[in-house]
Structure formats: structure tokens, C-alpha cells
Image (cartoon, rainbow, N blue to C red; front, side, top):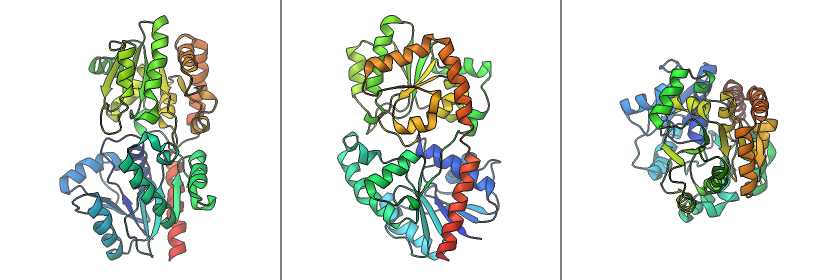
Length: 386
């Protein structure tokens, strides 16, 4: 039996992508493994920690006997990484510590480290992030990679990127795929669809985009492609789900909307809770995923579960996840993107082919399978350090 500490600070913070991955992975690990001891580290205190974490990581609302939440009080990220976590790891003789991207400044030698690296977009497209973020990530992520006993990548593409850009050997990287959130396993009812349309003001026909609106997501490009479609199909709308504004928001999106006079054709519902997302996908005509760089592509799986056709950038991780269930376009070719999207809007046969292929692709991804792989990773590393 080993003691495994997992940094769960991001869970429950309404982040996309990496928060959803860790939430589902931790929940699946706790459901699977009743032998090892799990310590879930957070900076939330008391009832706040319980109310934020338990509903999303405990399947029955109660943690199993071999898991507990521990609050490490910290004044900020600096004190958390410099003092709180290192002290806890030393005092409690933790066998394995699992975190994302950035390690504490000190980890005791007896503790094995597993670091989740969802993507290395900061290295591939540095121009798309702020200078201070770029300096911080460039300084600390290579340190994390050197100290970690095992890195976890969600795709073969991300594994290869880590090897190429940081010189990490392949045997140090475990490819453990992401999967579908359990909320997507139940198909929404007609009442759910009606409620979603009413609550968020959704039109009858729309192209859906989901995710943050930072520059590498290529949303301004999508808006230009949509402007071409609107000229032949004025009734079609574009719905952009995700936070508008913020530090990394691509203000080019607003510029294109003004240039193309699309103010009445684009809907910004903002953050949408996880429970409502299945109905969003089921209501959409097509999912558009124009990103220039990703580590995996969970929205592909979410669309497959709803039977919604997908038009996405022709980039390696999307080919890896989507296979033949996606219509691909060059993420720099506006006309090609518009053609791909509009074909799926009007071609019922193409839509049906994608629906069948998407259901087949879904069978390849399971959180329970991923949990088994990460638990096996924990146990092999802790045995090695004992």
C-alpha cells in the first residue's frame, strides 16, 4: 500500500480542458483503487473544499475510506509551491506526488513525481501567450520534466512534442488518453433541449464552437469563415461557448465581427455549466473546432456522443482522436473551412456517415481504462523508489 498525494487545486474552478481532465481522472481513480491511500491537496478550506470538490470527484458524494481531502493554507501560488507542499510531502512521507505542469520548488528525494503535461502550446506558439507567462513556463516546465519520474501525455502527438522540444526520452512518458465526461453518457431529453434553447437564447440552426478564446484557438478565423457561409445561408448562426474577455482573450474576434457586420449572427452564451453541455451539442447543427494547436481534443468526443457532425482543423491530435469521423480543413484556409462547415450543414448523408463513425471512435476512450493505466504508473514508480 502506497500513499499518493494529488494536487487538485484546479478542480471546481470552472476551467476548461485540463480541469475537466483531472476531475474525471481523479474520480475514476478513486472509484477503481481501494488499496492505496490518496491525499487530495487543495488550498480551499473546510466547507468550501467539501462543497467544491466532493460533488465532482466523489461518485456518491462521499470519499472512499482510502481517500481524504487536506487543505494546505497558502497566501498564493508562491507560498504554496515554496513552503506548503514541500513541507507536507516531507512530514507525511508521501510515496507519489501527482500534479500538472509545474512542480513545487522542492520535492523530497523519496517521493516519486508524476506530472501531467496536457500540451506544450507555450513552446509551439509562444507568440500567443503573454511575455510573463512565457518566461514563467519556459523557466519551470523544463525543471518539472527533469525532476519527474514519469510524465503523462494525453496523445501520441503530445508525447512526440515533449520528446522533440525538450529532449525527454520516450520511456519516461506515459500516453494516457482523455475520455468523455460522464454527463455525456445520458442523452438529453426533449425538455432538456427546450430548456437550453430558452435559457441561452439558442436559434434553431447554429454552428457551435466550444473552448477558450485565446489566439491559438483560431476563433477570429472561424468568424471570417462563418461570414462567407452567412452570405448563402443568412438564417444560420454561430454560437461561441467560452469566456469572453480576460487576459488571453483574442480581441481580433471583436474586430472581425465588426468588419463583417455579424453582431446579430453570433451568440456569446459565456460559461456553460457541465450539466448543460450535452444539450448544447445535441442542439447544434455542426461543431467547429478550428484550433491551430491542441494536446488532445475532448470536444470531438463530446460531439460524437451527441451525434453532431464535426468540422475541425487538420492537425495531428485531431486526426489521432477523430480518425475518419471528422471533416478536416487547413486552419489557415478560410474558404476551405467555410466549405467544410457548409457541406455538413446541408448534406444529410455526410452527417449520417459522421454520426456512425463518431460512435465507433467513442469506444476507444474510457476514463476507467485511463484510471487503470495511471494507477499502474503510480505503483510501478513507488516500487522503484522503495
